[in-house]
Image (cartoon, rainbow, N blue to C red; front, side, top):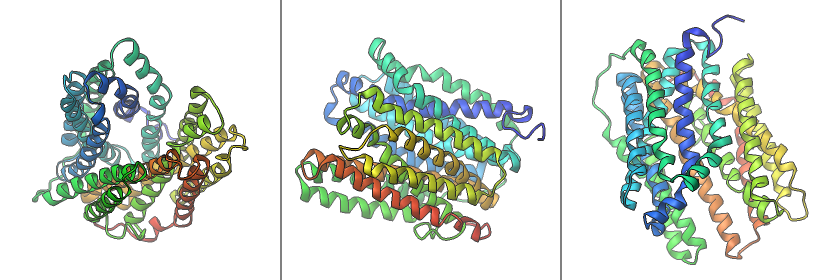
Length: 455
């Protein structure tokens, strides 16, 4: 093996550490906020607006992804990354020092925008700072950076919120995110700056806002539909679908919905991965507690197993030399087997313990497939549009995860209203998500059927 074949070899060590620190902190904040939110809204007298901080983050995150795509293609990774770190830090400060709910919501919005900017910029760093043979391992670093927050995030943030203050869940991250940004400054100075000019497509920002609000409307509409206002809920869902689709049509590569060979297929397949995995993940602890009588701690352990499986899959795709298509196909196949296997386990008479093994298998599949989609997008994208296509990949991930998780919430809400039992509701959800994973496995070769093409 070549001395410099790893992402932490001397030429790229500081870069990889900086990326790992930044991504870990973004992921930790995402895990921690759910733990801190109940205490925050109570102190700020904002229980009636409990969903707004989550919605604000989602909408601004999509906008940040779009802005970073255009900005990165014109100016390189440095401006959007530094701006993203700064805006994210400002959002942490605003949320941590908020004296009213609206300031807290603004802080969450800033955090979402900052994460969107920085996420695309990190992909551009991987594309330009690492040679081709190291990129899979660099993307494995990004995947691995999500594992530690998944393991310790809820516990640490819960302890801080309970014994110190929920405010320090946000404020304590500020110096750490600044340190992560500083670690990346040396490599940012060395990156070539694209010599491209041209007018910004401001319409894309408007479309991003539309797509984000469409997803939010879907979420709230679904809750209304199963919460006693079916007519109003159905109307809001319909409006959300229209607005979201109109927004996404201008943000994703043409042919994404049809999985057209090349970049559109990669972007579409990333959405299938995120939607299927996160929708089911949101219901796994609930089923173990409600149906099988597990404790909260025991019910959370499958998520730990999934995180470890994800890490293992990411390492495998970075170290093995198989075709990217193989990793993508086996990733989807593992996810499909995992989710299909959960269907009978949702029934009351079934054992709950196989969930631990199955969710580790699902995490393994995500670890194989998610970094692979990143490698494929960078490989298939001409240099002038790498930022735009990386942006589309992240938008597909975020929006699909949000939509399918909202759908899972509707299924659970229907069970709470007595429309159907929780076992049946989640079984149907798992069957549908398994079907999405099967579609992904059957179409995993599509990305390589077309030569790289401009958007």
